[in-house]
Length: 83
Image (tube, rainbow, N blue to C red; front, side, top):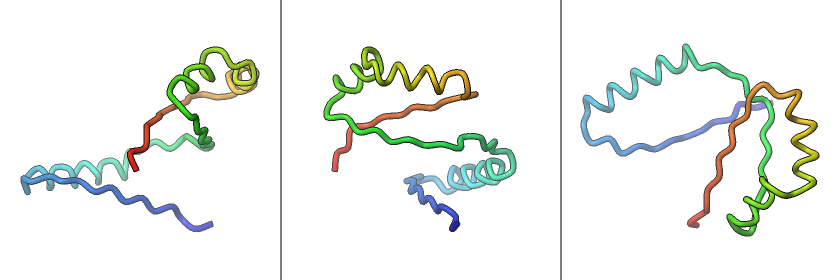
């Protein structure tokens, strides 16, 4: 399987600040703790639909009942696309 490449662009006007950020990336490369091994994307028509899914959806409650006891951590993020 090919590696996943990720590109992040920053606007950092000050060269000294750019150097500091690059040094921190070197630290990150040595100390980053891996652990997430499953990713799931769910798309909703609206924020209200997502809130319903999180708080009231019976199918989601059943899913959480299966996932909850076997996961050690989770991270959820959401955004509204502007494109």
